[in-house]
Length: 247
Image (cartoon, rainbow, N blue to C red; front, side, top):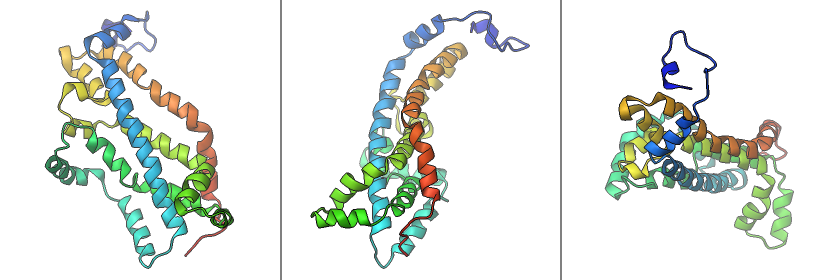
């Protein structure tokens, strides 16, 4: 869309012509590809951590028993009620004392420390629907709990794995608040911060913001296309009655 039509009144739903130069200008005026690569690195690393650690925690809740298990479950569900904004200042103080400011560690490491309460909840509920016969058969073959998790449970949990991967990728890809707090070097900006730069630089390049935003959603669409066929089965399996629900 031409820049003069962006602010025209009445607004035009269909532009008079397509300005393909907006895409090339968006790539040229700011390091757009660098922003995309930064976000891909952060999102990919965070997704791997979220899937692995939340699967481990979910497996522990579904298969292990200990005295304070019920309390830990209540604590897990209680974490879903805590607004993320409450933790911003404590997290910044912690990461600043560790020397992690202006690095990607504050964006990636938390995903490797449990993967988020909601992701753990999804894996926990899914693993409860898997009969223990699979565990017993693996134990007869001498498999450890780690082998059972990685070779038996996770391969059977493709729907919830795809769901957690999609949710984690979208969350970290569009995350604006945490990169704004922890990243100060222009070359380390993620795509969310990069899109904001188009709005603040040069008096506001709204036409470039639109073009860059269209390109920025492509990775999310690709991940969704890859994982979308598993999301429906995940919801149906979690909703069904588990054959073995430990107390």
